[in-house]
Length: 152
Image (cartoon, rainbow, N blue to C red; front, side, top):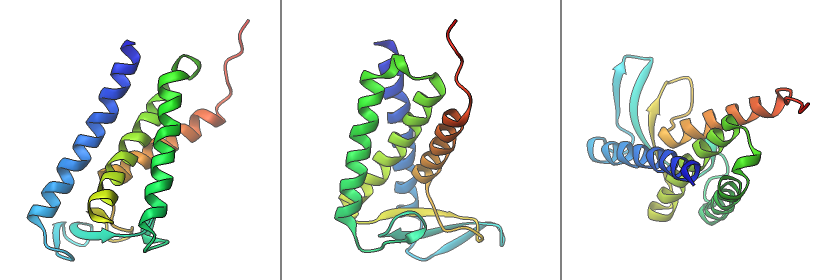
């Protein structure tokens, strides 16, 4: 039970951080406006992404809402019913993915797009949720390719 509460806390923390930063971006930036933090390296640029990662498959909001909702339910199942079977790093990676997915799902339901604002100029503009989804996916990939400890 303590694990489930901890996992919910992590997911809610990521979700809250994502939504708070998006709120700040929406209130402090105009669409398309770019404010240099480190000139020509890192800018804050408000972009409304109607597609998936990197803006691919634009204009399919219902598809992304459905896919994201199914993914969150699937991850929730593992977090609530299979936690004892999973290594801690796998569970943490699923929490990262779920928290980020929930943040972007909220945007899609509220606005029909995702609010992005981190702009490194050599990479598509992204947000906090995207960061946690990516970190979680990399962590999950690493845990899946590492050899499992064998029981004696």
